[in-house]
Figure (tube, one colour):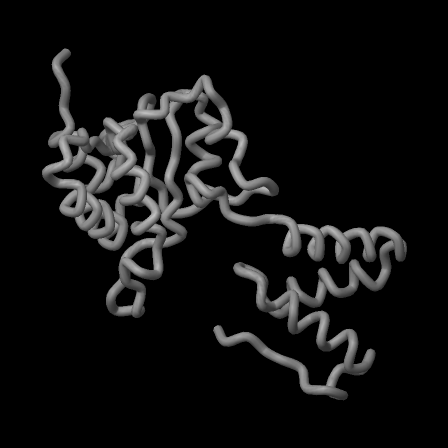
Length: 208
């Protein structure tokens, strides 16, 4: 459903309130009703709380940048993970978005570094290699420290296509290419697994 925008004087509370609803409705997953609820909350909450939200948004936009190594978000030149000497410098996990990196970190099972692509290849949408951080990845590879790349792009047509593109670029460098295991999750039931999950589980089967 398309977003509904208010024009200058259409909202009964005036232009400022209508403009606030419009801005909230631009956020992902926020429809007109949700945008109105958020706007009412801002109007009804304490002034210091509303201004605190505004100040936080302004601070994030002015201080957050991309890590010079992994391209994830950080307030300094190098993020905490890339700056940690305990991490395995030879192991790099490639993800599409910073939130993917956060999810993998929450598992506590990975102790290497990351590289954030900030998207995936989508030729039909006009997103090519130059729109991602693939050039920065190749610079890291040419430095000679990387021994293994873990492809953790999403298991979609675009994600797999992006992983294949990077694999072809890295071919001949001697770097080991792996990907996240897919298939049946521990504790699940085969009856409820879809075709793609079962196919991945069969292809990735291991010795018992």
